[in-house]
Image (cartoon, rainbow, N blue to C red):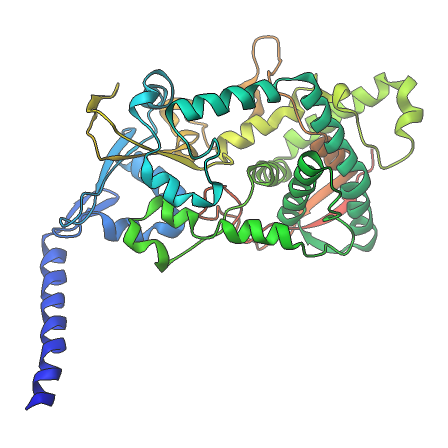
Length: 416
């Protein structure tokens, strides 16, 4: 009899659960790309799309035809998300009324490996750290340090690696090269240490791997309810590598842009005849001062519009507010701003929003207001990047927007 009662309890529980889900499925509401379940809210839809959140957010915005929507959690929770890509809302939340939209206590739990740094803190603590960081970043000494360090890593490590690959015809994951470049520049700049992470053997590095390991789970902590943190995890990688890899991929797929960049670099070299002895013979590494005035090289701005290095930001609400699109947000809500979607909305960028068109960033004088990395000039001017066919290149679900499976390429010497 005891055995019968023991088996009856779990069977009853399973039956109740099945009935519960069946009723919820029967009574769920569908709003274009979002399913709202009676008891679970939009949590099942969010979980189902957790491996493709950037694309899913974009699909929802386009399906609804507006720049904001709400996601509700289960009825037994207080979860409520407000997702917006409306440019006026973003300015309101991040700039003009930022004091009402802090990161919140949960944010620090999600990103606890970063301690009390500028990325985690709010209010006065954030303002103090931002003021200190801003003073350092705008100083000429810091700019010269980073510029010289980038050129040194490019000249001593990246270019020799690509030269060897061009000679042997060996394929390589270009995303891995970009990640190692970013790591070596950071190590040299911060610690004055030459990590040699880009040597021909592409050695493993305990610190680099530990940094990646520390970021595991941050993405799902950032998007899923707290009780689901340990169900899944994903790795995030640095924003520098993210910006570079999407740039190289888009340029390789847009020969017209690549041609214009090369033509600009050729004109630059021919106008610097007095410096040719400094550049020497192939491969050439250009000086940062020389490439600052180039226009099409700054197509990086356009690639970051389509594939932003940081895919989204998350905020909380202190006081009730009506945003500029009429949406009402209340205390306790979580706000998600998907920058990936912002760059893909036709009502912001026009019907050609999915096209890689650097010209959209030019002013009337054909100038751009951003500086560029010496790595881009050195790689594109010296080498052709041939992306291997058959790869499905899509974003990896992470805070930093990398390609899901890397980017396998062949490197060839460019004939100028």
